[in-house]
Image (tube, rainbow, N blue to C red):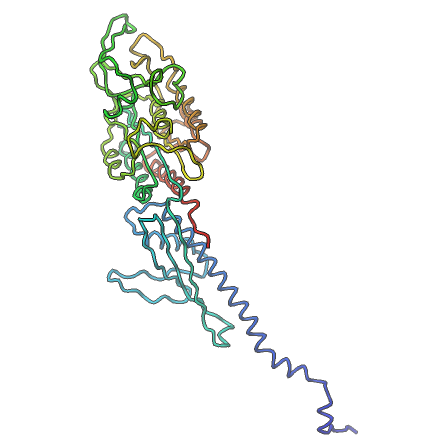
Amino acid sequence: MKQHKTGASYLKDKKGTVAPLFGLMVIPMLAITGAAIDIGQAITAETNMQNALDSATVAVCGGGTGNQSTEEILRAFLTAELDGTKLSMAPPADPDGNTQAAGDNELELIDTEFDAATGSLNPKVKTTTPTSILRLIGINEIDLEVESSVKCGAKRLELSVVVDVTGSMDSRVNGTKKIDSMKAAATDLLNIFERNMDAGVTKIGMVPFSESVRIPESLQSQVREYPSHTYRFRNRNGHWSTYILTDCVTERNGNHRFTEDAPGPGRWLNPMYSSNGNCKPSQSLIPMTTDHAQLQTVIDGLQASGGTAGHLGTAWGWYMLSPEWQSVWPAGSQPEEHNEDELIKATILMTDGDYNTEYCRGVNDSTINCNSPNGTSKAQAEELCTRMKESGIVVYAIGFGISSGSSQERLMKDCATDDTKWFFPYDGEQLRAAFSTIGKQLSGGQAGKAVVQR
């Protein structure tokens, strides 16, 4: 017969007490587990936000503004960086300045103004991420906010842009003149650096070359000895000719022909003479400047004519960056001493054809009865590229429409610092893409140390 427990027996019986105790513990255990899940998701979201914002902020420094505002650029890069996450961008303000409230996991972008005085950008993004389990104890959402701070000119940049303006640049590819494609590409390059130029941390100079390099009148006495205004020689046909001094210069001879030594006694560049006193190109080189508008004016006025003395353009791309030439260049254009931690020195060499013009004492050796003592234009360019890279200059090379496997292609590859720095575009769009890639590489390098540690 089954016996019934008395009240005292229930009090003494410990069997079955686990169930009520477990019931009492379920709620806090769920809260702890839910907190771990919800907080983990919030941490993941915050990490994604931070990485996206850092990338977008550095991209603003390295991408140029074009016709876009800083906010528009940030939004575009943030949208791309957040693809594949649970986060998205809240709609921007409408033309009247009205904003729509951000929803869950929608990022609100604030503080997007660029500080020109400090060259810095300090944007923030914030959002709310909903909870799942924590809402059982009254916590429905978690607020998140991250910020990024980038100094766009963390490194300074000195850049010489050496461009081929020979007669072949007047030919057309896909209906567009090569020189017009080059102007568009060079404009894209300038736009990338516009912000850093305005901040004074990027200086750009330009060396147009064809069969020689034209020197501004203010620099002529700095690079060549006071020369005779005429030069008389016996040409290859045995006839005497008298040529007239021009505003252009050619290579120098002797022990300093492949060095960055400043011009002076025994180191002067040869003045160029021609039958009529004219020389090509028609545009003078432009010393390094932070004046974006001045360079744009020069680019717009470039004209194509003459043969291809690529070694002369190469040499002047180096001279423009060399600290040895500080006394030559005007104030504001003088190159700094080398400092890899704070300064990038780079040149872009762009040509569309073979280097085929060299000189003997300032007169083309196809005219004068004298072979060039320095060798061919290609041989001189190769030696100059080697010396320039050894001095610490980063060399980019662009062969526009250069034939694959040609000796000129090999020269351009040899001139470039490494395999990431030579380009062989075949039409205008590819040329613009090459210039843009180089600009972004260099401007990204300027901002490489810029993300402030938090």
